[in-house]
Amino acid sequence: MNKEECIDWIFVSGLGTSQLAAVSVTFRLIQVIIGIGLTFGNGADSYILTEILVLKNNKELPLW
Image (cartoon, rainbow, N blue to C red; front, side, top):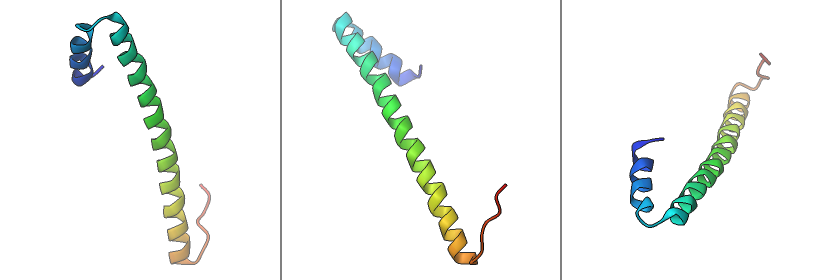
């Protein structure tokens, strides 16, 4: 848990328990969505870089 998350939870906890629960669930859901986006982004980046290197060198890259 980072500092910003603690500050948000302290502020929202003053509003009530259901509001704090809503923020907790939403925060985790957004973390999962960001993780999925980063996974696809890194995969696409790796694929594009590999294709650029293959086109630049006009040869197959070795499989490790």
